[in-house]
Length: 245
Image (cartoon, rainbow, N blue to C red; front, side, top):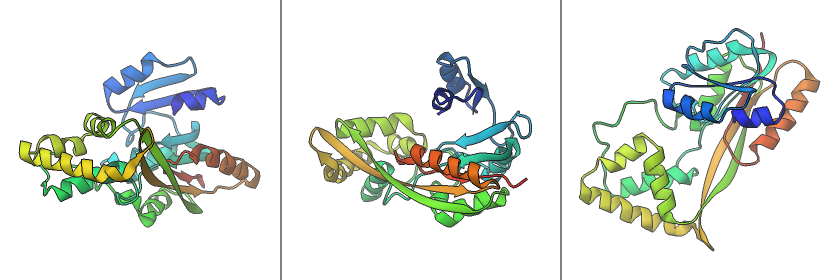
């Protein structure tokens, strides 16, 4: 996301992550106009009103205090700038994860006690919750949009291994089960994923929502709306807000 912003002409882009290893990996590929820092989204070490756009892609549902994070996003956004956050839809429509949740349910799996505590995973899948989050941070005229897209993969194994290697709570929820339960989960997964087969592999449908809130200047607002629509055609769920201060 940071590199795309730079490629589109942003003169200065700052990316932040709480994990040092993520910052190290991103920094290894950084361009001169992109800087990565280790930082907490709930306490950004950045000056007030210093960015034209602040974007958090599929992060808001992981933050312990999302309201605090949104307050920080608005704080560092310039007057007339844009704030955008994203989150997935509910499992019934976001099938990349929904297949796994359904498979665990069908297998009778209980959450292992060692799963790390976290906020409700699908709190911000609800229109009202995400809208109210943006409004509570001082953003206005919030608009909801839903987008659907497909993940095309070579095989069910690619999806299975990708989720087990690339997630935390879902992966632990499967890997820490007794072997017999793991086998039942995989069998249920194999059955559920049959509905996704297409020529050459599998295509897993996902659905997500967009939120946008308008600010003051109509001309700049229209330009941002158009640009945001282009970014969203691939289906990420985003919420847009424009500070009123």
